Length: 131
Length: 126
View (spheres, each protein chain N blue to C red):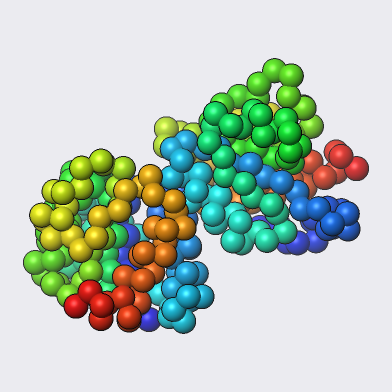
């Protein structure tokens, strides 16, 4: 079972991503997923600390209580093997990469491509390719 | 959530009820519409740019429209029109201009609302 953390404050988006990603992992990679949702930097840090390591963390940058790069940096420091993908409508994602993110995806990318890429990252073959 | 049996009429006629999503931002339309398409294979779901909505709604005769703008004048009043702005006010939907407020409204609830509107559209259209 793949363990995934999604840090995203907009609930419709995070719920939809959770459902689509879980289905894609199952259908395309034959793997099940347990996906946790966090809506703030504080929640993301708390869940990552309490329940980590995750196989994949998907992190938005603009969160109600701060900048998602804080979550990226914390996860990569505590759990270097956790793959972190930033998913944001922010145009310049270079700061997220500098903070240690393995992947940076703009929300303008078609949703099917986002879900495909995240499922690939979370899957066994994606993780071994990334290593 | 409703089951497939609510859509018997459309299935008998060989056509799926059409639902158009033109919510903004577009990433929301893709995410929410993508879920609706996956879990409701008995519906035809199209995700449109907001600027294309009026033309496509007039051309395709959808059952339901979900978008961020009120129904334009002159468009078929039989189309169930739901205004929804998840980024600004995620607990409120205006259905055919009437406010429906749903504290804690979530994705399951939204899909349930689409089911309800399709069902009502089917009853009205005979």
